[in-house]
Image 1 (cartoon, rainbow over the protein chains, first blue to last red):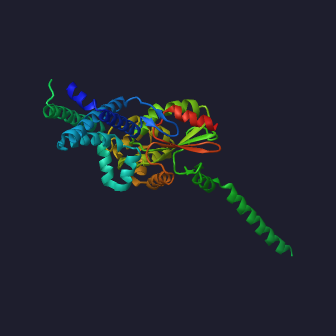
Image 2 (cartoon, each protein chain N blue to C red; image 1 turned 120 degrees about the horizontal axis):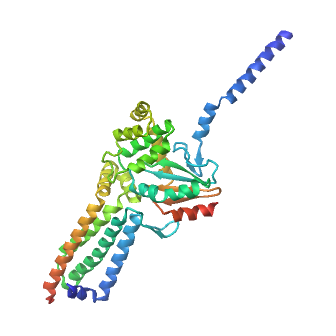
Image 3 (cartoon, each protein chain N blue to C red; image 1 turned 90 degrees about the horizontal axis):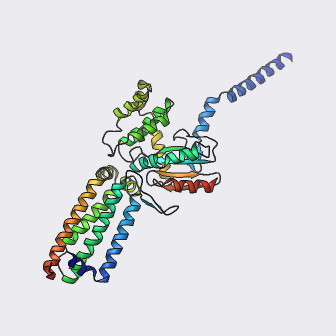
Length: 159
Length: 220
């Protein structure tokens, strides 16, 4: 497993890609979930009772930053199918969507634009935010292990 | 001639008495003044009663939804310090304006708060709702039956409260408040306007106390 990770991230391009994914996703989700505010001052805080949500955002960001560059590596270097890549993106997207549609600007825009359908979707994503994020972590974890296995076989990496 | 003077005198006395009566009846004037209540550019006429000293130099206008988790976070994490350091000390007052958009129970809860106001218990009911909020939207914690149960537990006249809530008496009031939020570019809850003597500043989200302190201190 370590050798596989080393193989991918020894290429500086993928290390940069991973760092960009992690920081963009983490900061974006922390802003959407109101752990970071940009106006009128840049400030961050974790209100009591929301610690679990914060930790889940960190895990989703870290797993996405690990899984997506590894799959891009597979596609670019080994010219393999994009199937596993979709698992990583799907996990990242549902993990992000879970927290985005609450009482913040995105939830408000969705409800204003799509009416009762938007309200139903927002209600679902808000009510099941934590379980959805845990499912997203599950999808990303499965994608991570299947990608590692594929890379081991395709690149003939020894344990 | 004398008769003519008497008639003129009677007319003048009638007009003066009429004017005096019109200016001495406060009810319609008071209602009109209330309808004109505004803070900065925001009409708060249909919002909550003012919490704190009406002559405080700063007014915090909060746009909120009783089912919003971030409003709950703000109510429990930030508001206590603001109450202690600014509202209780007369430096600021607060008015709550509904942006009830999250689910079908949200407008009903907002209407119920004004039914509580009819019985002089707006802020008690407001506090009860934010203390009773549950993690799921529209799961029944703020349905009509629960709202009536909250009123009952606060010792309100239940018959009066029920007739107010069931009639939809304050439906338009809540809609007016939602429109105020839209007109002022509030795009989520909680949303705030800090209105000072010379300026107003908009804050979005359940920001921490330090941000409110910094903004308000710069206005005093």
